[in-house]
Length: 590
Ligand code: AGP
Image (cartoon, rainbow, N blue to C red):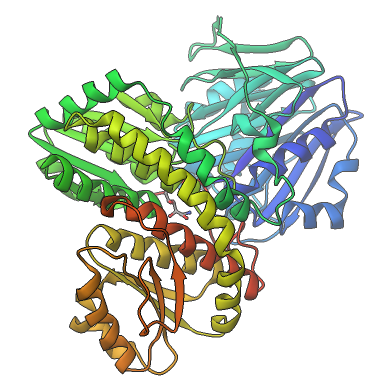
């Protein structure tokens, strides 16, 4: 879950690499580092902390050299300290490597290499520069050394290597971790994510597994797994830089919450015939299993409800990290729907690979158009919410929901009707987001000292209660639980005492009366009730008034104030909601 960048060209590498690393911090932000080649030597600076902090202490952007690599880390192997930060180097400080992924056979490799090399960190990555060192000492070029090194690695990797023996060159490779290359007028770039390319990059290309890339002053070349050069198609890069900056907001999270009316409309840019075809696939499948993690799983739970309620098609949702324990039940007559914003979550990827092995048909619902998941699935739906930078998923969630509405209504030939309803909801959302901010901020200020929050709902909104609780935990570090309101009395009610906030999602629908009963039970124990509803009741201590919509669409309007509540509570607790501790946006480890 790290981000890597490389640049070779006419310009000083450090400021360009630094700019790109800033856009990759969503992938990891516990340490950062860069290595450049200047005057025949490797200059390497790395440290713990956010990229900006590392730069403040070490002046990363001032590093000289026109060839360089950089890294932002989310620690997997080895604690967060300066030695374990990337880049890692060989014994003679002639080779430097940045890596994203996990080298599964690193213990064996370290044991063997330690007999001849000095390894200083606790990381899996450190084996790579030493493997390259051994190859280059045999007289191999940097790219051949990289190729031979990859033949000894097991696990997942995307890495870039530089060497003083080849000062104007970067070589790299990938397996199960993302890496793309881009051509600009000033030079050649490689990065974990095409969002991180600077504006001058107009064309980019994917790197296939087993390929080695070489970036030098002449451009970018590709070698296949036997070392033979191969031609590659470059694609035009169409990312607006506005989409990846904060546009005046304090945080990406708030910006992305506010974008939802517009992004929801983008989710509707779909091909109706394709959805009809997908609806037939769902209806025909002997069984349908949806797999996802975190927020995407809560979207899947809403999807399950919609399939059942609208299209009378029962399906199950299995969290991807548990998928392989159910793989025995997956067969060629199964349709597996994988939901993932990033399209690179390791657990989801693993589930889909398992499903394919079992002969199942796979459909992925993704945001990142060029993601690994999109590329391995039989069919893909793009949710089109644009870059989501904040670690907390917000706009991707509502767009995932929209896609589930479209699928469910396609199954009953009401695609156009659903599009119209969703468009109406997007206007509703706009008024709600702009009207609620101040009130929710006040509620957050009042409740910021509470240690536990409980979120309750019934029916289709149960998943929204869970999502509200996840959002709060993730960005404010306050303990929270979301559950069906009817479950409260089966245990959790024991934890409700004076002053404990209970967020009750109780739209004015078929759940309202029973919700009020459950709320009364919590209130009787001293709970502070935050009612998220279009219907007032004096039992609420705080009423967040939502707009009335057709009852099946309530999740789209109930979730937004919960996102805002999490955001403002994080602010009150003085946490950066965009970079929660211990987390990263793309979870590429199992
Ligand atoms: C959501 O706020 C979280 N950051 C997290 O639960 C996320 O939804 C999960 O890791 C799945 O990510 P994906 O959608 O990219 O697969």
